Structures are given as C-alpha cells and as structure tokens.
Length: 419
Image (cartoon, rainbow, N blue to C red):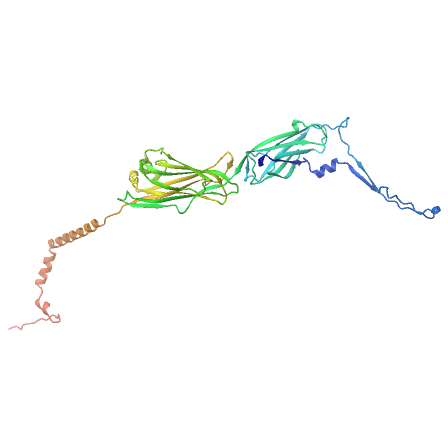
C-alpha cells in the first residue's frame, strides 16, 4: 500500500476523561478490618485470632442512578459532524497544524461514556482537544515532509457505552484538498555578459555572449519542475545570436530538453524599438528550449548556459545606436499539486549591444590650421589698410640719429652762441 493510504485511529472524549470518571463511575467503598482478641478467663486466657484464610478487607460499589426511563435501558440518539475550521486547502509544509471542529448532540436519553473515533492518515499526529460547550476542536500536527496524496480523508464515529447499534447520524466523513509547499527559484549569475560594442564599419564582426541561469530548490521536498529558456536568434532574417552551445547540467537522467523556434507577434520592430530599444521575442525570432527536470533536490542547484556569437549586421535595421539583448528563464510546476507564495520563478539577463562611431580627427586638424592662417592673413591685411605699419615706419624715419648711435643713450643738446 502507498504511504498516504495508511490510516490510524484516534479516540477522543467530548469531555475531559477525569471529569467523566468522577461523575459516572460508581463510588467504591472499601473496608479493612483486623481482629484483636481479649483473653478468656475460663480458657486459660486464650485469645481469639482471625483465620489466615479469612479476608481482611471488602469493597462495595455504589452506582449512580441513571435516568433511563421505566425500562432502565438508555436509548441515546447521537448526531455528530465536523469541519476543517474554515480551511479550504491543506498546504503541507506551510500549514503546521490542522484544526477539526466537531459538533455532537444527543436528542435521546442520557448517553454515557460517549467517545468519538477519528480515522486519519498516519502523517497527522494528535495534539490536543479544546472543549467549547457542545463543540470541541481537535488539533492535529501536520509533518512538513508528509505525503498525503491529493486529498485528506478523515472519518469520525461517535458511540457510547449504552450499547445501541451505530446509525448514519453517528458517523461523518470529510475530505480536504491537499497541496504541497515548495520554494524554487531561478537566478542569473554574475558571469553573464553585460556589455559588448563594435565600431562603425565592423558590422560583419561578432563577439561571444554568455547568459547563465541557476535553478535552486530551497525546501526539503524534491519536486519535478520544468524550465523554459527563450532568447532571440534572428531579426528580419538576419542572424543575431548563434547559440552553438546551450550547456545543460551533466545529469541526463534528470534533465531532458527540446528546442523550437518562435515567431514574433510584432512585425513593425523599427517603431517598437524606437520607443523601447529592447530586443526580445516580441520583435525577433526566438529559440525556445524547454527542459523537464524530473527531481530538483535541495542544495543541488542546476546551471543552464546560453553561449554563442552575437553578430552586429542586424543592428543597422533597428536604426538605434544602442540595443539591449534580452533572454528569459521561467520555472513551471504542477500548480494543482504544489503551491509557492514567494516569487523568483522568472528571471532575465540583459546584454547591452552598442555601435560606437570612430571619428577621423585629421581633417579637423588640417581645417583648423588652414583657418588659423587665413584669419592671420585677414588681420594683417586689415592692419595694413588702417595704416598701422605706415605710421610705425614714419616714426622710425623721423627719429634723431643720436638716439640710434648714442653711447649710453643720454640726450645731449648743443647751443650755438649768438654772433
């Protein structure tokens, strides 16, 4: 038999057991006696003794009166039902305990030593009972690694010491859908290529680009999952990325992959990339790699690598200088069986591809030099037309000779006497 098909029975009393015994069990009266004989004069002071075979104690039960009518037979009419206290789905691993709210009533004569038996899977361990007048709550602990199938089945039966036959109203069966809590994530590694560039005129060149993803299971339960990788390979018929190497984990018994091409749903990629320069599967033909992982274990991450040469001939079609190349990875699992509150089931890796313009500064240098010479000639011509050079020449011609030939430069004046 499968593990989740094994059941156990838990016996519960609607009232505390000690209280039931005190109020319903008969009173036990016990008498202990001994014999102390006195001397008898006419028998030479012999003393009577108690025979060793005689009992030295006795007991008697005093029963409580039961209100069972004139026939002294108590005919109870038990009715029992229960629910899972508002719980819609039992999530193994997230729900630590299961509360079962039990309703029981008796519409007949007094019912004595009433007991309820629960039949439940072995993975549920009985914890406590909380009495709420005619209703009580039975709590069961749920093992986080329990395997309970897809539905929890619990059966409850009520009976008493009155000895009457079982009726349908004294039994109740309920089922609860079951899911298992998981926590699987996919992340990108730091070794992925972040940026590549090329110069104008090198459109025929290519560079190696690597995108790496890692799939992890952060819980104890090993589960089957699937990973889908998508990345662009063609734009308008021109090769973008040539993933000659899509590295998979070296565990062929755990991972099986298939490949297919996806066509873009938006043909006007120029307009879309003008608004958002992102090269993804909405504008480019993509390759889709679907991998089925039969069992993803804890502390055993699996790495998936997309590696290939990215060419640059396609970039001119986008009319953009800089475009972001995008790949995606997505984890999927059986949502009817498993549930995950946290996110991180999708991840992206982006690589910026940029076209760099290389400028030739020689024409600029030559032009600046020629322009400087022309400007100097224009300034010289303007000064000549304004007579700047003529005034300087006239001043030099009118300057005294001694100013030019004086030994120490001192000025001397000769006065001729009047004759």
